[in-house]
Length: 326
Image (tube, rainbow, N blue to C red; front, side, top):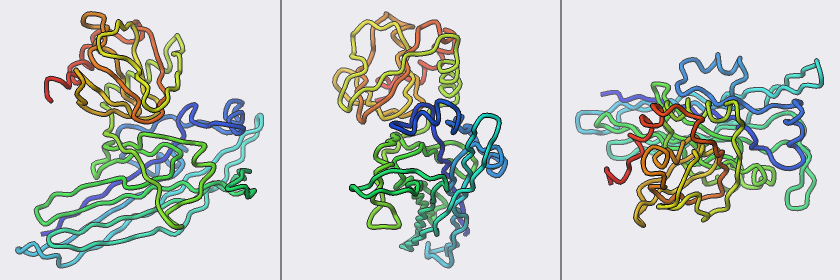
């Protein structure tokens, strides 16, 4: 029996993710942030031509298994897909092709399974003046993801994002093109000070969260592009965004980082970028029904209750009653 599947990561620069002295380049339009990629990817090349991502990592894996589960043959395909960087000065624009590094591929064959891991990445050709450990550098830091796929003799498979650069944002899609995983944190300063990469001594750990729903992606668009601009806040790790029982009259869109959801002192889940939170206080008794705590440093956009249609909030709340399924 043959088992085959694939996964694709897309890396992109979300709004307001750039920090420090390079941020003015984005604010005045010399460089640009990226629109969030779609929730489903059917044509990667069309997205690349439209400059919708900075980098992609495609991993395809297949394996033939005998009736006893023994691996008869296996292989892998795909690789890194580099986007480009467009620099604008007034009416003039310059598009610079990115520079890719050799893919790093490892394979593990076991009793009834094959695991393939690929690290792929590169850097923009645009100069990026910085200092690492006191040493001046001009080349941009590397951007990469490390994808792993395990295929098994029973026909199942598993995709993991086992490592990634701390910047920019990384999303992972399954073989059907559906968004399934996200890197929960972007850290521009850590990326600018980059030292360890897969092409050096070690990979960089990554906090991974499940992808939010299609409804949440639509609601996030309404929050960020509504008639009233939301208030963007940054909270340190360990800080409570809201506490159970407190009065609440606003919605939150998690822009970056990971938040734990606790009810009656029990952790019921963790959510990452793109999650819309706080709607139940608006729909029920006006008080928060859970405590939301920053597991990592986070950025959130806070918006008024009238930003989103009540029917949409009720639909969203149906999937957020975590205590009923715990």
